[in-house]
Structure formats: structure tokens, C-alpha cells
Length: 272
Image 1 (cartoon, rainbow, N blue to C red):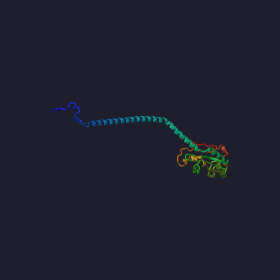
Image 2: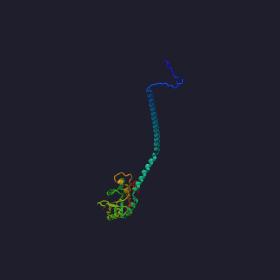
Image 3: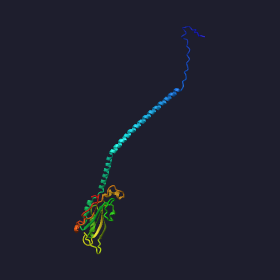
Image 4: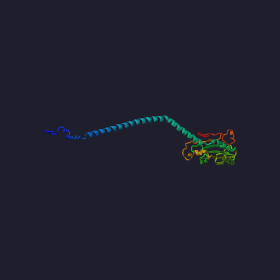
């Protein structure tokens, strides 16, 4: 049946219109969300891979630079090594010279003073001086020499009498630097029956022979070479002083009047 509007035409516009019915929207599935999530994961993985790859490449570049710098530094070190070796050698030599200077004993002055103190009637047959420390070679053969670790001079010879030997010891004791004069022996030379009598430079008869040691215990060389006295190896070479015997007088001539040796031989490495 067809609907007919019976209202007048002027009233038709005021009549309420019936509301249209809203169509229900169709329900969509979750597939779009899954696709979007997958795309986001792929994008994050790609970004992480790019960042990681860039970090690895940067580390590799840094490693190459560090290796190049290390190679350059090694070359410079090899080129400069002779200078370092020379500096070490120079320092070692300076220390050696300083040690030698500290351990130096004034043998010249000591021998000069002793030669002035020896009486004219005393004749020396041997004179030996050494530091008395490990490395010194001259001990003079006197048993008293090794009793004190200090510079010392060993004298052996003859005198006209025992009193002159005592007088010589008293005069040597006044020498500057001498702290002890130790007499090892003094005895008259025995003459065997029937033996040929030899002429002594100290006179006829049986003049006494002696052996004594003159010690210099206050020498600065003792403190400088203290490690050697403790039984340890010293880094400073210990020089020997003088080992000598008087020259034999020609044609029976007497030795010099002052009683000192006419010639002495200095061993290698001796300190004047």
C-alpha cells in the first residue's frame, strides 16, 4: 500500500522526518596489526644491524691506526736505542770514576813521608803497598797484613841494631795518616858454621832483619769500598799500590843513604 500525506502543503515542511537508521560498521580482523608489528620488528633489527656494523668497522679502523702508531713507535725506539745504550754506558763509567776517586789512596804522599821517616842506617829489601780489600793482589807476604782491612805498606829489610828498628817504628808512627805500626819480626841473621859469610848492606856481623806493616785505618777509601769488606762483590775496581824491591847495587856499592828503594815496579791498575 502506498502512503499518502494528508497534511496541507504549507504544513508538510514542519512535519518531523523519520531518523535514518545507522548502518553497523563491518568488523575488521587483526591481520593489519600483525603486519605492522612485523614491519616494526624488521625496522628495529635493521637499525641494530647497521649500528653494530658501523661500530665494528669503527673499531677495526681504530685498530689499524693503533697498529700503525705502534709500528712507528717501534721504529723510532730502534733508531734511538743506541743513544739510550750510550747514556747507560756513560752513566756506568761516571759511577766507576766516582767510585775510583772515592777509593783512591794517596800512595805518593804516604811513600814520601815514610821515606823521610826511615833512618839512614836502615836498608829496605822489599816494599809492598795495597788496599787490603778483595781485589788487591799485593800482600807483601807478612802474616800481619791480613789482620786489618785497610790500606797498608809492608816493609822488610835490615838495620844496624834492634834499637834502630824500634826508632824507625817510632818515627813512622808520627807520619800523617798512620794509625798502627805492627812489627812482625826482628831477628839477627844466623851464620852457619862453614858457610860463606855474605856481606849485609847494614854492616858487618849479624845485623837484625825485620818485617813490619804500616796501617792507614782512617783512610776515606775504607768507607768507599765498604761493600767489599762485607764479603760482597764491589762494583768499583780495587787498585793495587806498589810492589817493588830495591835494585841490587852494582860492584858492591851500598844502597842509598836514606834507606829507600832505588827502583819500584807498579802493577797494572795501580793508583799513584
